[in-house]
Image (cartoon, rainbow, N blue to C red; front, top):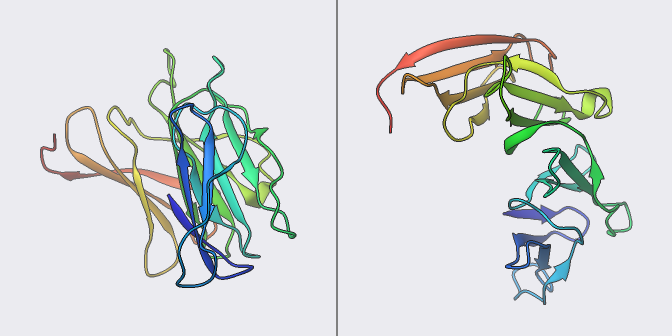
Length: 191
């Protein structure tokens, strides 16, 4: 995963090592080579996914290795250092996927694992409510992770494969909205 460091305009590359520890490397200067790898600490159950906040700081998200299925967040500080991994809670089995609202706030999405009513349901947490709580937005995402994009009017839309192998989408009701409409079957038969 790569991201552009807004403070020095260098590309930053993130990766999970063979020891399951997340690392990053930055260009030495714009359009120059990269330096060595620096640990972000912690042990992850998947690669970090990185977004950029409206004020330009990078934020990394990743599933931890604990049995709770918690999602963790590590935020770049204004001096370029990192906050350390903080649990956002949750019962994630797949994820994360991140997007930026029209107003610049980050949103993170995970698929809940386990069993019961909410298995394979999509949950979201947003910077808009200060990462306060997970919100069920629905869907029935049996395979992989949904993709997310912002359409022309600024609303976020999610796309993913359902259990019937058809492609589905769901969307914010208005740009930056906490409410979503689910789901439209776009058809097809996808592997």
